[in-house]
Image (cartoon, rainbow, N blue to C red):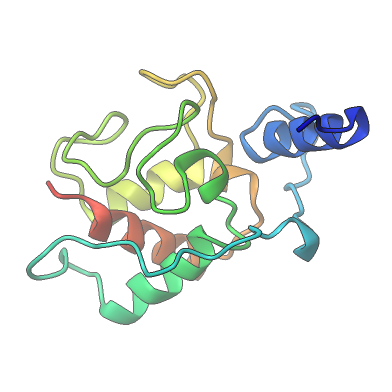
Length: 153
């Protein structure tokens, strides 16, 4: 099946904007219209680690964070709908942490999401602050809680 050139250009532009490849000179956070939401929601919620939640994390935070991760937070664009990574960004479900301490706290992950990753250790796409989305402090906390809950480490 051949994809029309206009559609291909649109998809490339959306992917670049979501992964920090947009206008680097802009101070405005990236906005994502509802039409850019994923075509399919995951069939079931991604698995989180077994056992107790990390310190400072509640089940409500994890649930809210998953909705943000797979929705208006646009994290799924680079990390995949289930957080297992893509060629652009790392797997968040394994026990390897690339840009935070080996055993990160909620605050460590919040700082990472807030600051972004200008120079990724292993992947080609830098992560802009808040992944390029316009998130509140509470939304950042929830995304960080969800990411921590995904880790097997």
